Length: 462
Image (cartoon, rainbow, N blue to C red; front, side, top):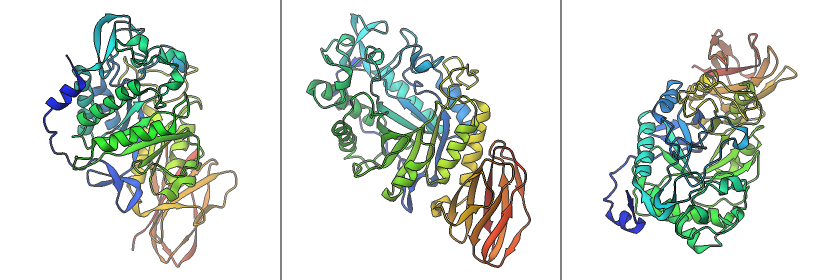
């Protein structure tokens, strides 16, 4: 079913009232408030094709995330997709089989789409797409999972641009007759109108969901994406929700690795970074009072340790989101059991998802909204290890140590009775030490033996 955008928007009735969507925590905007609870978002999710790929059954996928208590999924809108074999990814969910792509725009009656089937009509919506998108968000919400909806993505090469409905050869509207580097630049008013209409329609459709936030564009530092265009899309989202009782958060993807954000757009609440190890992106931008996210991982092999350490370091540095790119989810293995082949550009799998669940539960065992990263309160007395800590002054210490096989920890703590628990980041196994009556000043602790890494939970009980 296809309907002209203006007509369909006018015909839609009022959206049902929603509870306030996920927002920045009012007491500490480095973290979230979601359904009344302080929250961090931790996941190991599929490669962003859950909605646009009709062969992907997202219910078992979401069930698998919930099984480990993970609470985020990232998905692309359908304005971008990939060809088979892109970036060396096997069974890529962003590369649907011929005839299995669904986008916000309806198919026309004219053949000739480069990915198979009829061309797209950018003046008509595909009701089946929006039904699938809203059901995905509903199913995620029922499982306590937040959806990061990525509206756009640059075209890294002509292979991706050749598949986009926005390219003139793939639509019947004569829109998008340009090079791929010009698509997200404000240079073409006709294309800009189509892009903004898509944003408004998606924002309208998802207005009633409390478990959604928007990312403007994935990796806009590639493919010619301009900052004025990104700011315009942020404005469109903001304007589209002006009459709503609540606004959804907006994320901007800043850089791979790290970068200093000078003057962020006022509508931006989440600063996304990719491959953010070490977590310098948090340290450099913590003063901005926004959520900082490690929003994509990869290219460090398929073993668990590099990504597990990246996750722990990032959250201990004060980040609030860790989104691992998990290639074990495919359209034939929605439960995340696809065996990763050699050469895959990242990791994943059930063992790793369990480790992310351990991390999330560790953070949630603290009143973390009252905590902040500390570089001088906690230190290691053992060489050859990396030590990072979140601290609630005088009350609680969360410490992560990577490297070595046993470590000594020294920290400054006031007088009180303390309980120390050592946590295995791979298994979640916890070893509890005796209660300590500390007279105040430096407190020295020695860990049990471990492999690869260990975490310390130290809380004052009196």
